[in-house]
Image (cartoon, rainbow, N blue to C red; front, side, top):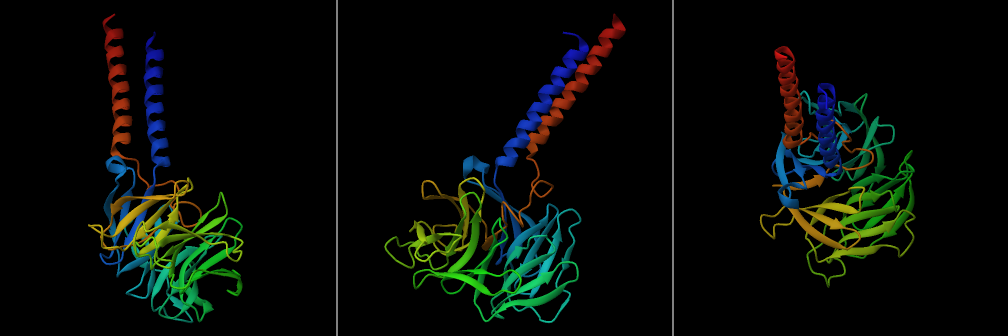
Length: 342
């Protein structure tokens, strides 16, 4: 094999190794989670430690952060509940700025948030004001969207239909232009709806039951989740994850048959655990914990990170690529010496 062929083979091997590493990263579920109690956002690698997961602080927040979404791969929008603010944190510059700079109403308790189609506005729940509000990201203006409700999770499906979990126990389809209720499905009495996510492959909504108490025999406190078709047909809600965890809050679908559930349970220790719910088997596996855990950023669809610096490649992948490049360099130098001595 000649020098050029050798170098080409080594470069090809390095490239294949890097591509393989990147593919494995793309298939991994990297979560971003709010720690309301700790006033931080965590980065969670659910595949680390043999699938047991690991969590590290991504950045500190201004006030207790309740919910978060990605505006783009470099910017995270989060609700600063304590401060009555919607804020933007840039992962490149580390700048943390207020977005709600003007508007007809003030913010009292912003919680769940969703990026709207087009990416220019967000809707967010304000449970202290008892309404859903809309924030224009370009102007900072906040306007009422739906008042007189107990708002929780918000989600858009792939058709642009808007759904809202409204307390205590209903999931509603809302008109995205004016907030009017188009359809409603009620869950059993005693259920407290909270987080909301969407399975775009099967057109199902999943809603968490904040009153889940770990008792599989309890009608209201047993199910950790409910599955609901986007038609919201009466009687179509299916209880899931019976007795498998307590006090679930934010939930996200990963696009591959799993739902990650953020719980504010205190037991089993250390508490504040993330669970991986396998839709096919109906079984939850405890993954890792985040101190003060509250919510999770979407993994797919609007508000998800997508490719970019927010999902960095593991050091092992970059290390492997660097080693490959170093080997190429050493081979080039060796071949040059051999040519000079010939």
